Length: 354
Ligand SMILES: NC(=O)c1ccc[n+]([C@@H]2O[C@H](COP(=O)([O-])OP(=O)(O)OC[C@H]3O[C@@H](n4cnc5c(N)ncnc54)[C@H](O)[C@@H]3O)[C@@H](O)[C@H]2O)c1
Ligand SMILES: [Zn+2]
Ligand SMILES: [Zn+2]
Image (tube, rainbow, N blue to C red; front, side, top):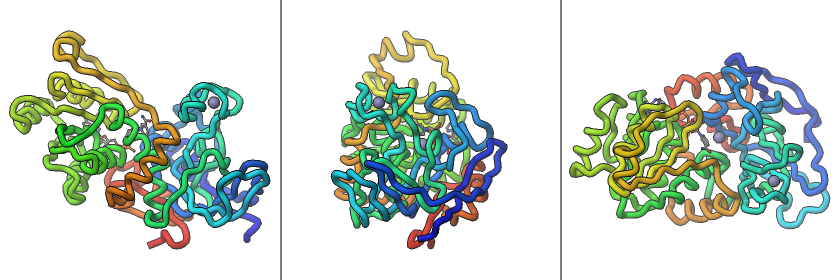
């Protein structure tokens, strides 16, 4: 094994910097993973790539970027209890203290320990390098039937979406509206279909993204974002609106569309992060008995459950990947993702290079 490796860091001025690191050695309860696929999330662009916006849990600390890593265990630290060399693994992308209430619920994302909570690619080294050190407790098995690029997407995007969809509940009773068809919104469409939604509708401002959703067969209807969206959705749903709506853009107008285009008694989940929204509580939610949920990433047992169900449903998250780059092209990968002219963008290694 090489002693040195290359890693990508995001200085916060829409560029990527490559640095050389020693290949790290796993400590107690840790594994060394050979990275195979590392996908880019909209949050990386919003809070790190253009400028370092985040504070607290979103504060980027100049580490190796990438919070959606997937790979194979190549070295074991002492004291491992379950995982071993050769295992294919997804990394739940936040390492928590393990003993606060949020960690005990499996939601390391909202771990309350200032000292021990560290997200991969934000406060500890992430997936944009040839190797990554992870704690055993942060790992989820990747079955042989799924590719490493399938797995990388579960690490944040699909896990996040599955959590949101489980909060509002999706079944064959539901017509589902998704606003914002970036990788998160596309995942929301793919999982809604798999969970049995009887109709899916997607909205975006970028025509290319509407095309990707159509080409992948994830939507029954696409609508270009605009002032008449609520009327357009009612026209497609017998004047009623959608039973479930999923907001994945963070845009204030799209948020309002999700609220107003939800049917009476409907459920709305906000996944897109940042920004604001203005609505009138009485006509928009109270009198129509609607519920708005907020949803932040997921817990680790639900991530395991999602992997099991992805297999059963026979879907492949990697189908959302429209572009693959090698690590030395990571600058092109981030630039493309920030342009929005793409589906999911992956930085890939070894057998994942195609
Ligand atoms: N809640 C969580 O735990 C969580 C986890 C991961 C990502 N996120 C957030 O989810 C969002 C989506 O992530 P992504 O990777 O798909 O990002 P993205 O930026 O690629 O996708 C956002 C999409 O919204 C579209 N959009 C903008 N204005 C719109 C409008 N008025 N109507 C409809 N669509 C509009 C954009 O064109 C874009 O395609 C981001 O805000 C990201 O930070 C949240
Ligand atoms: Zn993310
Ligand atoms: Zn904790």
